Image 1 (cartoon, helix red, strand yellow):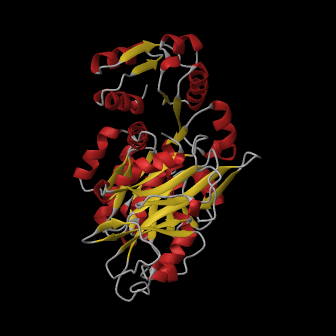
Image 2 (spheres, helix red, strand yellow):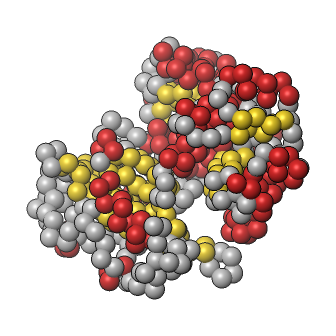
Image 3 (cartoon, rainbow, N blue to C red):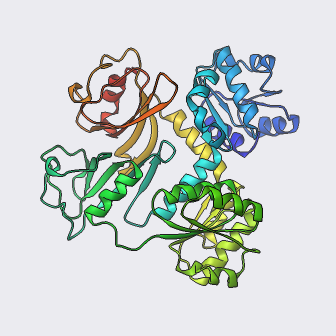
Length: 445
């Protein structure tokens, strides 16, 4: 068991869940048993008799978070076949599984596949794109984005009702935040005002187009410098390319720099000897909106961020493999430290505590949230168009992800004419007080 597993076991135990930890290393099992209030079993989780001894058949949730993808996928399949009700699997990188997601979900029976690299790269991309006024969230591997866009003086929005605004095809205004009234779901007659915060959901390109029309863009291309040749560095650059961020990626490894050049469309990939002030000055690091240290070595990430900050780059982000370092990094002046392992364990804890709806993001100190759920056979609204469903006040359907008969996927930005089907994965923006009614609509009750 690595740090992800230990942190999870610790947090689940503190939350009064009954936890059983399985690991083949007797030294680790002994340490866990002494440190945590959990049941332990020493053995290989890919062996049926080990899972049987650990009572996998009665588990509400099986979590596979070893450092080996194959171990996690096989143990998940065995545990589910033995009777575990749900399963979450951690993999290092989703890339090799991207074209087989539906096939794997059907045959390996996992409920969620979480990737350390994707989680870290997504978090880095959000930090790079976020400023003090705008929040950014990404869903469905970056195919859907939600941004909080402020309406400023000079915008064409003020005084116009929602029904008269021609939105891009794949964009929804799911909520409006007002200074005094808080967060609300707007109706067709809602008129916008300067100072409103628009919660805008859609595909990245269309949301960017809407932002430009609202007048949010200031006309300056955002620029980031990423140092490192890790998978996280590559994935973060790919995310940021999709959002029009100009990127310079600095690599020390020639083979990786050539590989990155082939995979990245609009990123300048440069081979350098190492993080040094003269190199960073030559590559205009001080002028960047954000510098990211994302090599596979913590010490290099720390050093590169310190150099960038010393040269004048105000925002620095460091990739941290050891979660214990995250607080230390921020204490010495690094803007954010991103730990893939902590992100993974936090994501799993959110799934555990979300109940029948999966919590994806919180806004307004918990008053509003983005949640996901799956339409069940028992839902009385299966086959109904969204416009004909008595959706409660405070709820907005955002995205429907549908598995097609051929195993492919269809992604729909929800419109009134769309029908709910059994097995649809839906993403909703909702006020917390309306959550119970959503559970009934999806047939989760």
